[in-house]
Length: 310
Image (spheres, rainbow, N blue to C red):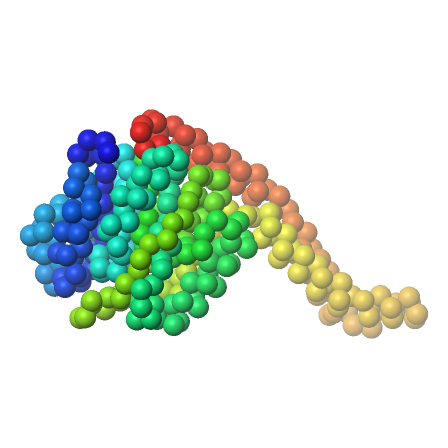
């Protein structure tokens, strides 16, 4: 390990009074040299008091949403390595040292703790399906490197944290973290970690439908922003295909009779064809812009001073 301030454990919290004290104590026991930060996201219970009593450094983020808290944490806290974990007591603190050792040994940018549930109560059935669908979608669109993109247990290098331009406001932050690493081709890993059920009296803050939709929208937006050539060529191809399908009977009729019987359809076909060309042009232009943005982000990552955790 490095000096006392080299490792920071970051715990975003909202109304976790029943669990936060134990989580802080367990991580302090697992990582005795780490600084433990708890960011209270407008809790209405005794979360802050419980975290402070357990020895954590307590700060506040008034903007609601996990993404807003993570963005604030990454901006405020200086360390050589970071452990990000939820404060609900479902993740195993004893796995943190193993993940940090792997981060240092292989000089990785990010490690994701792949959740291995200890009981059927750990996961809601809808969340299991949703995680598989979202993980499969991200793997198909951006490249397969992870089996659990929505895990809230992660370890980062300083270079990753200080060069990550977080934009997400809610639970879609895990998707953004994953896509950022995949699009830049950063060195990453995934390790299994035990995932337990929430303690009695602790309720999940994740809304199956609302947050599920936000994750879907995040994947769509990230695909458009990070893969504009594929996105706009796909849309343009569909428009061109629609134009050709509608134009086929008109062309056949014209070749037989020399007449165009349905002018509105002909106009629609022309509009679809022109729109497809515009999509192709947008894809080519935005692909050049995106490559420039990606180079800038990669240079920002590489510019962070190397240390023992990079």
